[in-house]
Image (cartoon, rainbow, N blue to C red; front, side, top):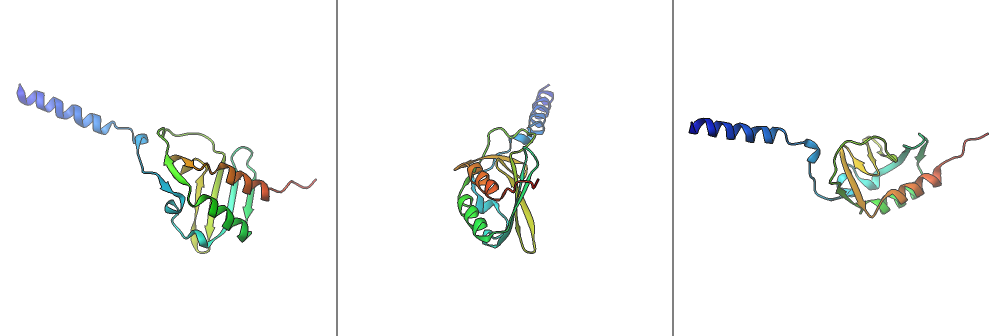
Length: 138
């Protein structure tokens, strides 16, 4: 009887561990410069995709790129308590270096982890997007 009880307890514990939701993953807050796999000083292009309307902006102006990176590199990406999958996004931001795989992130996510940032990087992205957004010619 005692071994059946012990087996039952072990089975329950195994089910609890196996049933842990991976969306509950926790990571530590990180600076953007620590999340970025390349050298921020080597970024040669930024592509912005507006998730609201699908419009795109490509920034190659090195002064604008440097200014944007200076604004976001020290931003702290703090994992959101709610890691449930979401639909849609405000912006997809892609940083590109010569001969390096492009790095894409969102205003509220990097990879499959959702964050909020301190300071909020959305105003910096909005500013860059609006500066280089071209009106369609008529």
